[in-house]
Image (cartoon, rainbow, N blue to C red):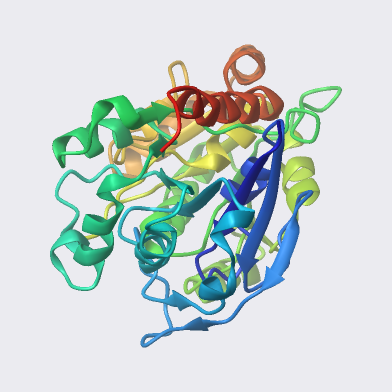
Length: 360
């Protein structure tokens, strides 16, 4: 029997990957309320949002979706949203009340004392989600977070993110060039400033080392200034689609980023890490939040320190055999633990497990 799911999106500036994963689950027919047309085999209902503040807040968007009330609960088996304290999660909880529709909440949250939980209306959204049928955690730390906040363990399932290993795939021949790729938002919390500083130290030992930066954000000007200096070895590739990112990673020697926590955010996993590893290259990054769930040894997790980053980068850039060996191990682990088709099927199994427990 086909599962009928209503996905209520956050007001992102881009389609969410979580929604794409839902659309890839076996025997699932997804209808999505979203501002922009999502990717995937699904039905899209173009939606608008009411936003008192026009900015995205980590761990929950301060926005309400229009049009949810017009959807008939009888047409759906599930309503699914992202994050516990997003206001659309609270909307979905109220919308399905009194019906047979089950509710699922996907969460990456890994801050046990998330400060947003204490602030109305985020707190009300959190409290209204407590009777959801399924809490689908994308990282192990999210399960611990839920339990620490009093959510029932028997309704929690963990399924790690998947990566399309047919798109993110190694080059036929690993590069010999000492090229480092940074592919992430150009924002302070992702650490492009640290990486630029580290590369200046790296080039003292490996003058031919290059840094290619893909992404956009508030620190773009910093990267543009670095790229304008032809002596610096920095190139700005701009915003790329998935295939562009995959090609960039496959022809790199090392992937590097340097996240650091903010008052309301810490790195949860980092999809760019598994994309790089699927392309068969090593990862060098700073230890932040729970990104150790994505970055395993012998990849390098270092302190938030420019010299430590530079030292780890030099280790890989100076030893092609080492990075080929680590890259091959990374590729094998992605195939075994993070293949997209397998992980989407596991997400479907989490929904089926709750369904098998009986009617609401």
